[in-house]
Amino acid sequence: MRATVHVRLKRSVLDPQGQAIHQALQTLGYEGIREIRQGKYFEIELEEGLPPERARELLERLAHEVLANPVLEEYRVEIEGDVR
Amino acid sequence: MRFGVVVFPGSNCDHDAYHVISKVLGQPVDFIWHKQTALGDYDAVILPGGFSYGDYLRAGALARFSPIMGAVREFAARGGLVLGICNGFQILCESGLLPGALMRNRGRRFLCQFVHVRVEATDTPFTQLYRKGQVLHLPIAHGEGNYYCDPETLAELRRENRIIFRYCDAEGNVTEAANPNGSLDNIAGICNRERNVLGMMPHPERASEEILGSSDGRALFQSLALVLAAMTRE
Image (cartoon, rainbow over all chains, first blue to last red; front, side):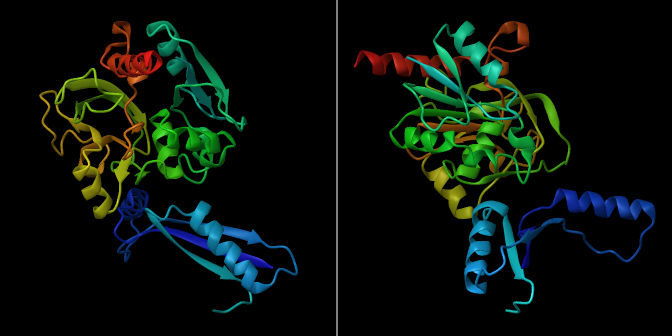
């Protein structure tokens, strides 16, 4: 079973890296881009047979406690095949 | 009195801190490897600067889970003196021992330069030998030193007088131009509510001898030694 966790800066937090990428793209001549925000993406392989509720609970906890810093960031947990 | 300097994989100011305690202060000090689960008989613990765990995930995010951090947390809860410098400050924030977080510098660059900071409070074991309003000349060396917290936390830090150092100009004016990294309210260092845990981005241990260009950081360590000496006498 595979899961993904997306971590991104809260909207209210400045993202200098995203801004730098945006500026570079403008310099390179890419048009039509209004804003870029950079985030992190984690692919997590879960052990087979883990009940989906347990898996979700586990992932929410590790996203909150480790992968994201809730002071600055928000996260989204997705489990493949588990559409919620 | 005995000082301990925690060594994480990737710490690189551990020897600077050790040098200041042993040679400048002339006090006993040990390195504490991060795999230890217990702190020995220490009176003050320093989390040094560097790039623990290569700053993977976020600066300080993985060091927070090092075995020694449980003991550091208990030590702090007992009132033990904990000083986090640079990466040490980042680790203290990630650990929840101090509020807020240190984000990437506003200007994106790694900053390695001298700055001025103003001493905002002297009622801590770390700053009692300074004057309130005193301007210190200290080096910074960080890519993620941009202090951030939510407005409620900032209000609390102000109300409880827990902002200990703020970036300022040479005359002591706290201005936007004197803010090197975009830190909220020019914050360069804060302490916890009990005032026994201090985190700061500038490096006092790199500015404790004249030969290094500034000795303004020395009084911070001397303050600690004075407090500990008084505690030992009691």
